[in-house]
Amino acid sequence: MFANRISQTLHDEHRATIALMERLERAITRRQPIDVADSEGRRLLDDLAAAIEADTLRHFDFEETELFTLFDSVGDQLIGDHLTEEHSFMRPLGQQLVTLARRASAGGFDTDSWHEFSRAGAELVQRMVVHVQKEEMALLPLLDQTLDDATEARLLDAYLGTATPAS
Image (cartoon, rainbow, N blue to C red):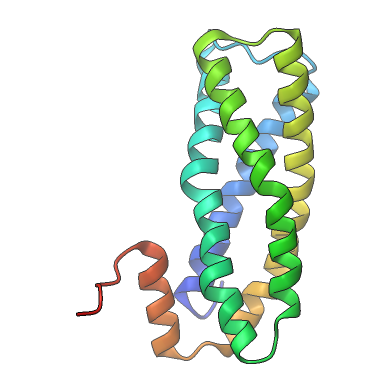
């Protein structure tokens, strides 16, 4: 448990992301294309596409525009630079998986699309798990220790989309 809500919110999202990556890894290691006629297979593809679009990319953007710039302003840019570099590798993989998952959900996999999906999926799983571990061990504790109440509330409002526009 974290002392502030933004760290806890990001931690909860990390847990959901790891659970999804575990589902993806199990499907890929079966070495058989995901059966889109099966409700579990279709749900995995739909969950994967939705989570990458709605959660993962938004999570990355928030970290880069809000958290890493905050750390930059206090002279601690190394963690943000490192994690931003990792985001730059995962974004295209995530976007590729969204496209492949949506295409497969509509028409299934053929040999080539399954190979492309499983290769990109395995790479994303590997990168994402390590990335989340780094954020859990370094970024979230740093946030938990350094944010004052007002900054934490502003960040949480910004992240959850509840911030009111300045007049």
